[in-house]
Structure formats: C-alpha cells, structure tokens
Image (cartoon, rainbow, N blue to C red; front, side, top):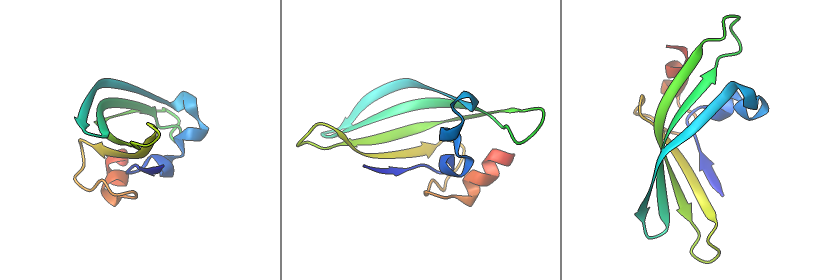
Length: 97
C-alpha cells in the first residue's frame, strides 16, 4: 500500500501513541474504488516542557484494490496547507506556528 502524509513520519508519532488522537468525522464513497474521510488530529508536542496541543484537520483519500477489497493507497491532505507532498516544508512550518 502506498501512503503519503505531509509530516506525520517526521514527527514519528507512531512510536508515541499517547501523543496523538485522531477522530474521523465523516466517511464518503467518492469514487468506484475510493473512500474519503474527514478527520481531526490532536497531538501533544512532547519536545516542549509545556507540551502544547497541535490541532489539524483534513481529509484522507483511500484507494481500494478491486480484486481483493483491501486498501491500496492512502493520501492525507491537511486543510491548513497547500503543499501536501510527502515531506512538505510548509507542513513542517505549520507544526511550529
């Protein structure tokens, strides 16, 4: 499965599950083999002693393999930035704003 997220891998939140909470607000069938979810993500910025919360919203577009019914792609789009490439300097800057 291909996966693309603007900054999540840089923050390495997968190693610290208690630092991130993500809720999916809606889920829509947006194509023959595609669903799109709208989500809100809240992260604690653990590098600072006061541990501020960072709140992001966006959508995830997930492709489905028609042969086996499993997800074959996952691309996240943040609402707060225009450049949603895998590593986006704009996404990194958005974290520190």
